Length: 421
Image (cartoon, rainbow, N blue to C red; front, side, top):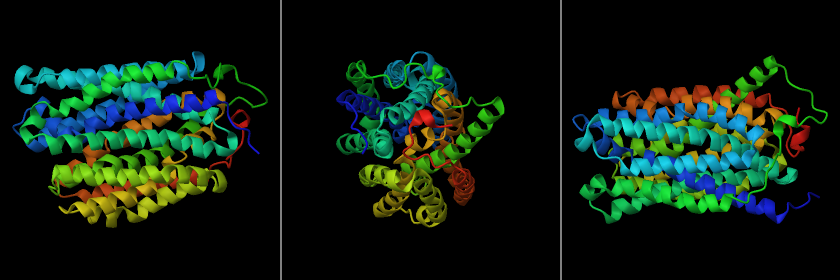
């Protein structure tokens, strides 16, 4: 029987989770408020062009993630996971406050767009470091036989942050007029996220360290050659390509598509998206625990292959009717949950401790930049030229490639992480 973790580990799991929640709140608010940001901080002469420019800045934030991942991945080995998780929280909060305070395009012209780009680059670097450290941290402090269940806490936090961001926008659109939303309402969530970071920093100050010096961890595990490091890194990259593309398609792109292409009422779209994300969050710990019994390989393949099979019928059913978004996004998100419910455990079990944050920091962050950061932009652009079906083909191909990688995974479910070779 697995021994229970000390109460300090449970508190550390909570502190990590609350921080993850707030980081993803700050990160997701940008997406769900993109229609308002486009009108406030870009030239409004062409509505679709300003929206695409807003989504391009969103993508730029993702391309800063590999830099953050590389820098903070190395820091996590030298200074510990805890130091990184404190630093990234502070960076994300500062950038959110900057976005909340940027004057409009009408007031300062192109400087508004430039300031937004700078803030998103800072957020992207922080996000890369947070993801790199938190995946490893939670897996390392978890009981080996319940690693999937504990790992579900990461994406419960991620999903809760995204959900609260969506709910916040749904609430604001319900109580404020369209003109108030455009003038100042969209700024409120960014300001709130930045200010709440003070509480999260207080929570994280006493987190336990999962690995005192990961670079010195040797035991009996043989070091990897540069060739093997690159080969395993490419596997992580292709796995993450499938994981992140399917995630962003169903978490954020679906609602944007419903509003900007199908012209669904914004309040209705945000509300339906909130309900779908609640179902997804409830499913995550169940799926995480299931992975402790049947293995991470099986649950991951259920997700990737399931999404590849269902993307065309689900995306095609979205119309102006709110219930269509609810049904499609709920099914899509539950399938996504078969990856995210145990993702930190799944990837940590494929990489030795001494290389874990380094490989996560570069290859996972790079895949998120290329495939997650461009998902909303690519799908919206293709829809604007009546080629939305091409995005679905793209997703199917990437999901199937990722499935091939997962088929060749080692079965390290429940194995002590220090014994991973």
